[in-house]
Image (cartoon, rainbow, N blue to C red):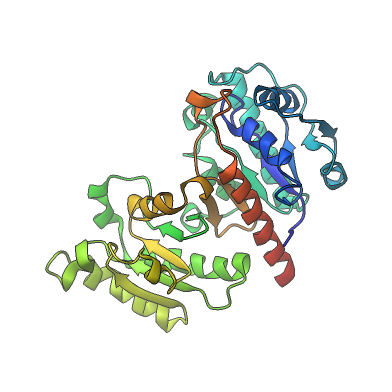
Length: 336
């Protein structure tokens, strides 16, 4: 299922993004990948390809509509001017500026429909902050650019074996209980439900919510969040026609026979979702932002400056992100 030409933002040129983008294009025929263009970074990409002994012809394009015809023969790269200076594994201010310019233009292409969706290569948050980037990460920037409140931009990690959403993300474990509210659960689960319908074509998606405490609280003997917060939220979701179940004990809900009973696992905190996802699908994990007016995915890994330019990075997660973005775009187009 092909959803049209995707825009891939370059990511930090000192990271592994450019080399795995080049390798993904090299596998385009073998893996029957959907067409994509890269936003900026012509020289970065050719240099990254050379470091992996990849023959990478680049088609520098001035308009997104030229990407699809170029893709079979060369990697389409939308011209953004010069690339500045960069070195694999050594992030610089100029590299951060190139990464930000690529991200901004990729978002614009997706919002205007010039691209069917976007895939973001990894960036260095600290180096973006050094040049005045005022957002915690790319997700928050894309949500803001799309006119969506941060709370409605929901991070989902997905692989061949599991889709999982953490309701609380980058916070101390000791803070989770105070952050967990019925309103948070309701708001995020409504976004998940709509996204599963719109982006994955599931008419009645099944959401399985984990408990917070061991054994899902064991009727209050190991905590009260299940009885006081999670279960009432699930009851409300079911009243709204959403197929939500739980709270399930988190130590059993990721077993193979349990994973067949739901479409998305809704976890209460970061590691409760990411540990099983990475144990099952580490190399093919995709980070997808639900609730946006555009399709956005990214590989589930960072810049990996320590191995950049050494030919060690695997393109599997990026390839999975490209596939997922294209399929989601196709579902949206079919239901429009």
